Image (cartoon, rainbow, N blue to C red; front, side, top):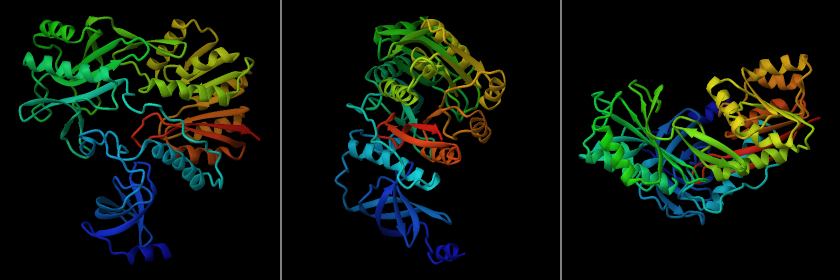
Amino acid sequence: MRESKQTKDVPLRIGQQMTLTIRSLGINGEGIGYYKKKIVFVDQALPGEVVHAELTEVKEKYAHAKLVKVVQRSPARVQPPCPVYEQCGGCSLQHMDYQAQLVSKQELLIEALRKYAKLEHPPVKPTIGMANPWSYRNKAQFQVGKQQGQLVAGLYRTGTHQLVDLSGCPVQHEQTNQIVEAAKQAVEKLNIPIFDERTRSGVIRTIVARAAFATGETQLTLVTATQEIPRVKELILELRYRLPQLVSIAQNVNSRKTSLVFGETTKQLWGRPSIAEKLGELSFDLSARAFFQLNPEQTAKLYDQVKQAAGLNGTETVFDLYCGTGTIALWLAPSAKEVHGIELIPEAVEDARQNARKNGIANVSFHVGKAEELMPKWAKQGLKADVVVVDPPRTGLAAELIQSLLQVKPQKIVYVSCNPSTLAKDIQRLQQSYALKQVQPLDMFPHTPHVESCSLLVRM
């Protein structure tokens, strides 16, 4: 009752200006301050700063504000190198020194575990970062449109339908930037119509460029609203001339009114249907729509942390839940007796099996289904895991799966997470049978607030 009274005592209004001391960073990279005990999120404010801010949104328990002026500056504040940083919204921490970003990601995990798992001293290690936190994204997926008669490709400005052109994006691999730029020039030169969402007319919707870090092979996919591309033969010749390193040119057809990038039909316009990529000792063939981690350098480090946490000696049975296309299962297989992957999406399981065959790994199997149903069923048949690896979506583990884990009782659970809050909530529930031994944060997406982590839980 007391809290609601305090809230009523603070008559905040949109447009109101205030001076705040920023205490910490929020999960979206905004600064967190307090005004008469009410939490205020301030975009682009950094911990330790004193700022003038203007309220843009007022809710019962919190408010949002835009930064008006930095009164007392943090030593971690830097000039963002990207010219469209403030318009784009793809990265929200370029104004923060990289080492400070790594510290803030460690603190996000510590705070989440204190709040939700009720751990006073969570065993969170320093964040594993990148020596060069730029040019790390191996795939660009840019919408196209016309602005003042010019063809632009990029992302929509946060909360709007206005495209921000991302030519030369500093977090994209240089080759993906080159492919997008060349594709724009070729489409413009041949006057191929750009899709207009308002009139539902035109052809080209999205340019998707992918570069394989290990092999240098590159792939271009044009997502179209129509089955046919006008002057397609000329377009292919133009693209091959401008991009001699291209291995694959594909067309994906998406005529639906949807925010999803890809449609169901993919046609090969020229070259191979896939490009070759490696991750550590593993090889992968990546078709136009195949899922692959966006930051290969950090992915290899993350999987090494999973292997280290699992502590395999060659005698263990491992279950890899939410296994996707099987990358973690295949990474662990050489160190385990056997690995069984479980995944809901049949296409991903087929890709996982193909990846196992390609790499000659025989001690893995992949299964379509729900882990919470398959694990107890296998236990009754005598198949039990020594180690279970979970890599769930941002929403965390399903309640039924947590129950299933507590029921089948593996010796170790290795939890790969991309969301500190859901990780901490899940750990809180697992703590009735498991002790949290360590959490290793890893920076998969520098200059964004996202933090990946690998946690080890051991049965008590």
